[in-house]
Amino acid sequence: MMSRPIILGIVGDSAAGKTTLTRGIAQVLGPENVTIICTDDYHRYDRVQRAEIGITALHPDCNYLDIMQQHLSLLRTGQSILKPVYSHKTGTFEPPHYIKPSKFVIIEGLLGYSTRAARDAYDVKVYLAPPEDLRAQWKVKRDTQKRGYTPEQVLAELEKREPDSEQYIRPQRQWSDIVISFYPPEGEQDETNGHLNVRLVLRPTIPHPDFTSIIQSTNGSSDSAIRLGLDRDMGKPVDVLEVDGHATLEQVNKLEHIICSDMPHLKSICDRESNPELGKVAGTTGETLQSYPLALTQLIITYHMLKATQIHL
Image 1 (cartoon, rainbow, N blue to C red):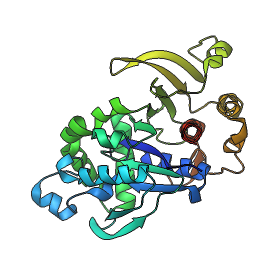
Image 2 (image 1 turned 180 degrees about the horizontal axis):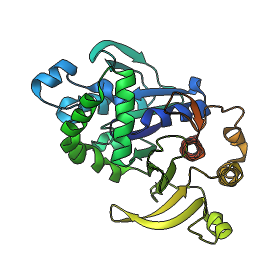
Image 3 (image 1 turned 30 degrees about the vertical axis):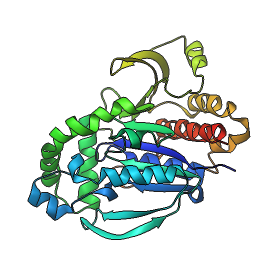
Image 4 (image 1 turned 90 degrees about the vertical axis):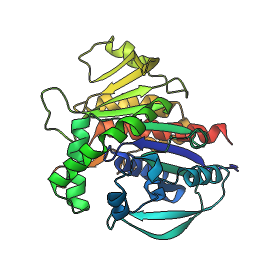
């Protein structure tokens, strides 16, 4: 029996795609095996209070980071917590929820890596870093459709939050094991979902699947739909895996085979029929699109979570 849950962190700015990524990973692992916690629940002030004080939700002083940190430590040892609840719909707090951790715990939010003790609680740390203009489009779409704002209000809020984003959110990138950047293909700047490319920065802080056969099969060709190379991120050497949104299922299957062959007893994670949500994303008019780069990203993160269970058995 495992002595504690495996904890995944997904950190990124508002509307960076955290919930979409989380949903697919939870589907693969089995919703009954996953506890999802959003760190927005640890806000210190509600929406009206923030406006009165003149503080944004991104500022550490606007969040009970000490309680978040304490709860993470408890969850890591398999203990239950009484979690606060913040409603984005109303901008107010609701009664707390009693949370008993499942086999896997996904912590997603703005400031998940902001303290050393919090960072120590995770087995796998992911940071989402889409281009800022794409994130702005996503935020306008989400906040107008789901939270009752006008586009002008959303853009004004983005501008107000920018200093805090720069000072408190983006620096957390340095603590991640994987940095994920979805971006539109060249010449397709209007593309916001289904055919986005992905760039995965794979830091040597955790052992990644051996993707070197990709280089051999493509001869390092820059026009291949899947590319692996060396780069530096925040001054440190990293591997970079890029997958184009127009990659074919055949090309993607080769990559999935590498991930799954490393874990032969867990091939079910690569079975698309049993994981229909893998790589699914909402289109601009609400239709459901299939994104192979998103599916691969979700699979790689799932791979790391399953690997962590083996380490801690």
